[in-house]
Structure formats: C-alpha cells, structure tokens
Image (cartoon, rainbow, N blue to C red; front, side, top):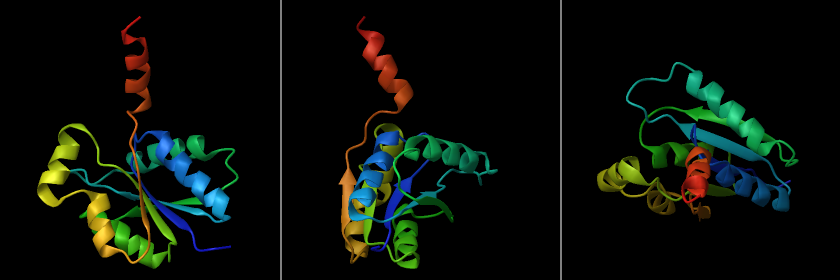
Length: 146
C-alpha cells in the first residue's frame, strides 16, 4: 500500500470533494486521511466534529476506502494541512477550490488560496478540485426554475 491521501474537509462541505478524493485513494490502493482545521471564531464544542464524522461516514460508505478524521488545531489552514501531510506522510494532498462568497473572499484577501499556499509549502502533489454548492443549495437551485 502506498502512503495515504490527505484531504482537507469541513462541516457542510459538498460530499463530492471527499468522494472524489476517495476515488483517487481507491484507484491507488491506499487510505484517506480527512483533516479539518476549525477556523471558526469560537473553539468548537465537538458538535462540529460529530457533524463532520456523520457527513464523512455517509459520503464514504460503500467506497471500500479506509478513512480517518483528524481535527487539526486552529490557525492557518494551509500550514495545518501541511503539518498533517508531513505527520501522516501523505502521498498527495487534495483540497477543494476556495469557498465562494464572503468566506472565500476573506480567505483570499488575507492570505491567498489554501491550494496556492500549499503548492508552495509542499514537496508532494497538491490536487485542487472544483467545489460544488452545498447539497441544500444545489437542490434549491434545481427547483428554483420550476
């Protein structure tokens, strides 16, 4: 088995990101390390971790890929993902493109995209996947024109 793939995740993220990362892991015959960097203004009371575990379990059920969740310390997302990649000796780091809206704009304005910064920090490949809207928005948009 090759070294694991590491994927950046967060509660409410579209399941497509982690499912596509699992597809890469399956094709390579390796496991998936899901890393969440809690960037909220208040320390999480573990409800976010429980929610994320449930979302990941639902998204990854039936993929045949072994996975684990790591909750990294708060702070700079790119640096935390970089540290996790080193700690877990990840073969590849997978991230979604930046979030849309105010959160995405703020992250870009304050320090650049996570993917861009990771590509400068890492000596391993960084795969950037396009982000789909959250499932609740997706279903609303699909029925909005009806």
